[in-house]
Image (cartoon, rainbow, N blue to C red; front, side):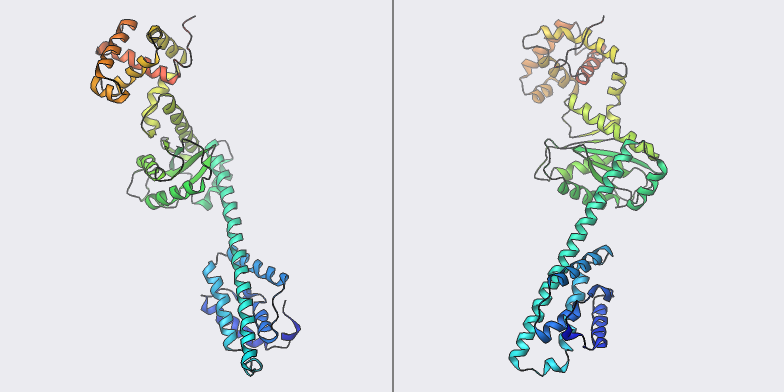
Amino acid sequence: MGGASVAGSDDRWLAEVASGASRDAGGVPVELLGDYLPLLADAAITGRRPKRAELEAVETLGRRAAEQGISAGRAVQLYLSAARRLWQDLPAVVRSRDREAVRAAAAAVLQVIDDAVATLAEGYAQARRDLVRREEALRRELVDDLLRGDSDPGALVDRAEPFGLDLTRSHQVALAAPSRRLPDTDTAITALEAVIFNRMGDRDVLVATKDGLLVVLTPADGHPGPAPAADLGRLMHDELRRLPRGGPWRVAVGRAHPGLYGIARSYEEAREALTMATRLRLETPVVNARDLLIYRVLLRDQPAIVELVHAVLSPLEQARGGAEPLLGTLQAYFDTGGVATDTAKRIHVSVRTVTYRLQRIKDLTGYNPSDPAHRFTLQAAVLGARALEWPAEPVAGPA
C-alpha cells in the first residue's frame, strides 16, 4: 500500500507520528495503523484517493482491533490522532504551496480520513458480531449439554470455565415460557441478563434459549446479591412483563441441587413444573418445583390416581354441561379455602350458582366438599384429574 510519491518520504517522521498517536490513544499498538499514514501523506502530496484493496486492508485492521479486545473508541482515536499529527507536521513541500493547493490537499486528506475511519469501524463491528455469534453458539451448546446431563464431566468443566461457571456449586434452573413465539429472543435475553447480573453478579450465571424457552442458570448458594435465589422466578417475571412482546409469561423454577448432574435435575423439575402448571390451569405466573411435589407423588402411581379419578369424579359427567363446570368450581373452592364468595369471584358466577354446584357434586359423587372427612379425597381426585387433563382426556375405569 502507498504510492511511489511517498516512497522517499521521511520514514522516521511517519514513525514519530504513529508513536505519538499511539500514546494519544492510550497505548494502542501502532501496527493497527498499517499503511494508513502513507495513505494520508500520499493524499496530501498528490491528492490520490485510496484504492479498494487499501481500504480492505484497513477493514482487516479494524477486525484485528476487535479481536485484541481494543475498544472501538480507542481504535478510532488512534486514526484521528494520527491524521491530526500528520497534518500538523507535514513536510515543508506541502506547507509552501499556495492557498488553493493547501485547500485541495486538506480535502484529499479529509476524504482519506473519512473513508479509512468508516472502513475501520465496519471491520471492527463485523468482528464484534462474529465474536458475539461464536460466543452465543458456544453458550447454547454448553447449556444444552449441561441440561442434558450426559456429557463428559471433564470436558464440561473446561468449557464452563470461560463463562465463570463453578460446577462444584449448587445451581438451579429457571425457565420462562412466552404465551406466543417471540420473533426475536435477543431483547428478552438482554433484559434478563441485565437484571440478574445486577442482582446476583455476572459470574456463575448463564442466560440462553432452548426449545423456545428462556433458560436461566444461577448459583443457589453464597451469591452476593440481596435477593435469595428462591426469588429468581419473581425477578425474571417482573422483568419480562415489561417487554412489549411475549406476554403473558410463565416462569418455572427448579429446586437447587449440587454438582454437575444437579443442573440437569433442576432443569427437568422446571420443565415438569411448566407442564404441570398448564395442565392444572394454575393462575400464578411463577411456579416453583418444590410447590408441585404433591403432584409428582400423585402421578408416581398413575394406575391408582386414574382409578381414584374414575371412582370419585366420573359421576360428574352425568351433569348438564358435563363435568368441567363442576370440576372447575370444585378446584376454585379448594383454592380459596372453601369460601363460597371467593369461589364465585374467581370463576365469575354468583354465590348461588356456587352453592348449587357444590350440592350437585355431593348428590352425584356422594362426597360433600364442605365435610373435612370427604375433602381430602375430593381434592386429591381434583388434582389428579387436572394432572391427567380429565375430562378432556378420558380415563379408563378398573379392568
